[in-house]
Image (cartoon, rainbow, N blue to C red; front, side, top):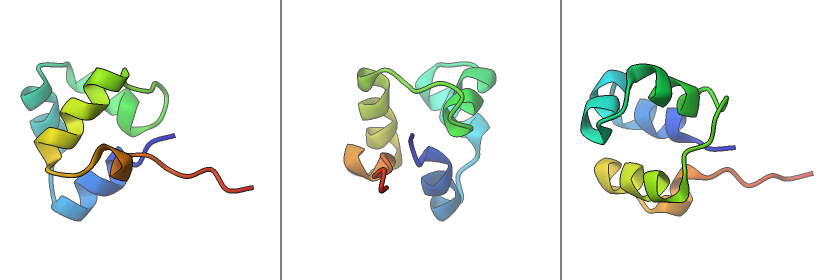
Length: 64
């Protein structure tokens, strides 16, 4: 699970903007945001760089 959606909301950034910066389709980014698909590690690091956050900030801890 990732928290890309939460970080985008915190920063007031739109999915469309992130998709353009990544060079990916809106649908692909939306699938990351909705946790239907997880980005490859390289893409996760690229998202973190674009959003100016540490990669670990994009990951959720699974607590049972």
